[in-house]
Length: 403
Image (cartoon, rainbow, N blue to C red; front, side, top):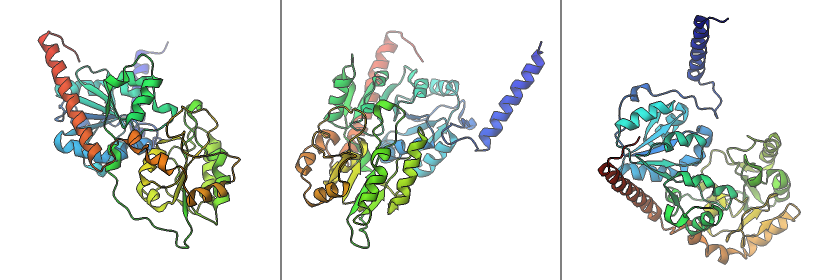
């Protein structure tokens, strides 16, 4: 039999080895390093708002568009950002100046929240690890999401886990009410517009030096769920860029997660990178948009971000079914069998769907006037905290307790 001393030694060696690996920074980018900020243990959070983001730096594309709104909220209601990956926390701390804390274990969060007066927790995705935070009953839990779109994945039964969902426009509320059973979407949703767009810095477009019109190709990734795999790289990518090259300056904006599920999708991504005139990996979305005369994209949030530009838009026809929507009913779709160059030329010269698209801006994005959505976001957070205070007072009066 193996002695208890030997088992204990093996356990200590394993813990030591894991700790060394985490501190070495050699862990894969998609795996949280769980390097706890030891100095924060045993001390309360001074803030009343907490952003919970347990995913890694691969998912920073979800968080970065919210920087402006979170900093605006922090100015009036201080925010603490809780991570499980210290590398991600360090990046966000450097980029925003927000208070960023890394906690490895649920018990550490439990200890700190028990000492704190945090009233509101915000979430940007449906990562299952969110449930470590969702357990706490003394907070109001609000799902923000990281972008509105007509993707099937934009609605999930997981919304029931949150007390409230802050949505962009009526389109998102209608989508949720239609798709999620046994859920009062109207009662649990707050329409705030898209504060992410308020953080956009006005940029000047850079036309092609040789005068060619610019086509931006910004497909989505292959997705982890086959039912929502709307990415067009394998069905359209190489043929599209090849057909447009020469006549147009083709700018390719790859999704950060291209190829993480399928090697064939990664290969298609690499092939398109080789063919494009420019690959925008370190360029802001605003700059990519400013430089483009027409966008080709997939069923994704990019379509909605593009809407306020008023410029021509083409959406690729996916190989899987997508939910019906007001936007997809009016936006021209690009089939793999189409004459890509001819379709692009037609829409650059006439843009027949523009009036219908313009009419949908507020339906999807709310009031796009700069600053309005950020003010609504802050007001919605204040209302949620006031709701929590009223509920908490009632519970205390009734003698109820809870974590």
